Image (tube, rainbow, N blue to C red; front, side, top):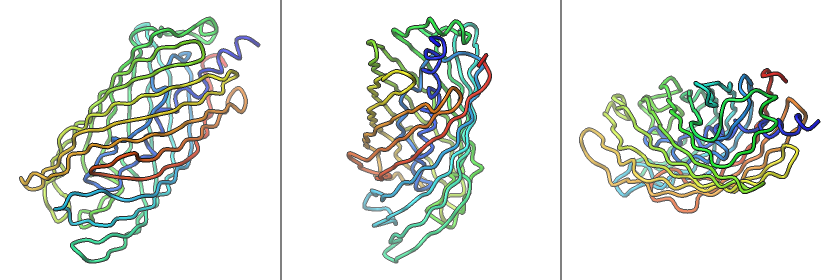
Length: 314
């Protein structure tokens, strides 16, 4: 019974990275940097598989610079999420691989060059693939060994890649896909104080060019730098909650050689609650809202994730 209870700490550990999917881009211009990922770096027994399905709803607008053709945009996105993750033994350190496949229905209105426009579209977003490893404070452990594990200081790193295969129409300013690759290296550190854990992560998103941007133009974008802070409390028996915050900076765009005045300086706050159902199933509820937005998506978000786990000696 004790081993089962301790192992339950990892039941919902690896869905945190999937919350970013719900914060998907509103336009092909601005990348999804405003992601909240509590417990992105935790130790979990190796050999576990996670199948995740979920739903998220986001509603809000776009904060644009004076030269942008888009004004007064109000968008609504319903997103269905399917993902898979597996925990790994990476040369004696705990690691993870995950893939995320989102599908959305988007609708909204805006003024484009002063003319009212309406947009309704559905389709796949760009899928994401991520590999992460905890290189300090989180050794690779079996389910039996994990029963005696206690976190102190944990340091990890990850690399996420987004592939440009989602829905995209260069004649439209608002799309689900971005028609370009991005790569995001990230590093995180967390410190446990009994049931309370403090987390800090820092990452940067690098973009390739979109050579078929709106009207056949070429879009380039500077890197977006992102920091996150999370305060997580473990209530026991697999139940935990987190208060989350993030700040993003950068991402200035260049279209056909013309630099835009659209540097992002955006912050968000959110909350997460994880609830185990039984040994194999768990549910996660999440919500977030914008605090300040200079350029980019200013939206409210809420959703639910269901997770099923198997393998690893369960």
